[in-house]
Image (tube, rainbow, N blue to C red; front, side, top):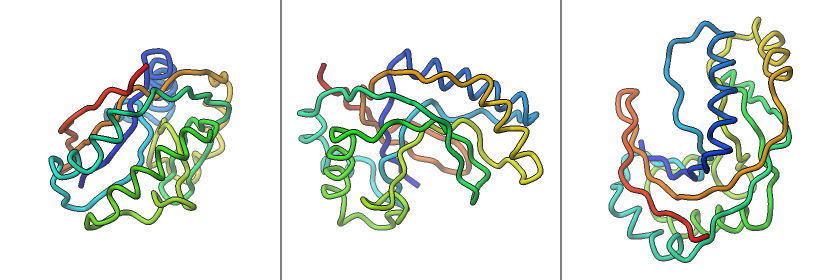
Length: 173
């Protein structure tokens, strides 16, 4: 599986990593979380270099996107808690542009399509239902709104639970 993601600056990454540590301690998880990011699209079996060719020109012309993470969110389907960024026109346009540029690639996930996409910075996954309330309470006590920037577009390949960065394109300041 390949993921196109926005990587975050030091400030936002540091805040999400802190929340990830709190979530993992509360859940007694030892699985390392993915680096702080916002997923833009997921593919089954796409060639990372072909993805780069499809998005490189638009990514190289894009500017870093200011972000404000103002709340916590939750996806029931996977027991996932996340930091929720405010959806700005710049974030929406970049997401839509990436999806348009990659529309011909096989195996796109429907929940990353425009109109379905919920931008988020994952804190912790796979929390069992009996622990949702306590996890939300724990994270709520630790969470304070924070700001940062999306500074790079990356392609990750995830194979057998291991993640590798295939390429990165830094966004202009």
